[in-house]
Length: 556
Image: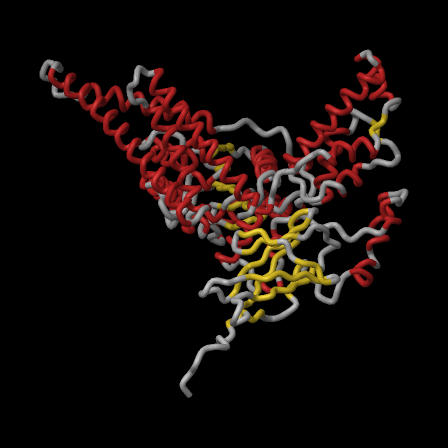
């Protein structure tokens, strides 16, 4: 099993165990009586068990299914006890209600729920974000699209004449830390200059409510949007709120919340409200297909070199002077495939190293600050690389593979064989650098040095990874196929292959690689994902051909 998948499962198991322990503590602290908070914690644990069941197979998957069913049964018992408790209060009030026939207890409870929902709804409205499109580096095409949406919103009369719907819906998809929330809030900043209101929620905030309250919150969300147009509605982590109803072992309450969400969305769609609806997720395969059909899908890759450079400028400019051997461009070059959170953690580690270094050198804080401000102390390439060497960026292979699988399932790209689907979400890959390029004195000269490189280093096939044969025949005696491939993206070291969730180390044959694979009986083709010490490189589909068994008799 892939080590990344194992880490992911381990993290979910730890979270699930912690949630159940918290539920036990809540139960003990409440005098061993059932409570709403206990139910919330157990529901979260049940969701994690369901996710782990979908990530595993065989006996392990069955174990998680049993655990999920156990938690669902416990939740059902808690709900039943809470309902009985509420019912008992109602009967007591009716018996002592002096014959007025009014269900005072139910009215009080209903008023309390409504008041709580009113308080929650007020927190959905956000202040104007402090940053705008000018603060967003890269993403030029996306900014152009969103700016066009802003311009369109100012021409209501023409839109009405042409019968163009007022409602705009976008679905932002991409790996974690690629800047989805940042650019959406920058978009909201621009719209709030046009008197738009900004409603922003986390799907997990609503789903964590006690069963029954989540559906009401979803309904209220779309009522607020319709009643307060023009407005922008941003739902982050929509995968936790509008779950795919075709997922195995999906709890009934989750399916009901999805139905409520789609019903609420249909309201603003039918009324053609002046609403801009935006949802974001790292896991589109977990979102209901009916929601995906209702919005324009926008793919956000990991930050490119320009965006990474801008991030380092934001963190270090005006704080420390860079030595001549270190530039912000070099920082960006050496952090290929980092997301914004990786860069933030790296800069924190680098600043801590600077903190200790200047204290050791100068002893006094005031003197150290003056040395940083005056340039007496400068950040060197050696210091940057020493911190970078010990830094571990977040793993991204699993999430990008999930996104690639989802792209194939929705058939958003016509020809998978000639399209590197990972490039939809991955940033630019570094070109194989010559020694002279690393020592170039000026960043502005780098593009000129790169221009002739394609003719010199790119092979005849331009795919990052490609098979050396159109199909691979299975040996009739051994039952295995010898799969051979080449890498055309960049020089690779420590190459590994993930096939059918199994990690394989291929053998090198000159510039090519090969490994043996035993396909299942029904395998006609398998997806092969290739990575190396530098991270994910690319993928290809290996076509499997079955040979006739050499020792089998046939009647002619």
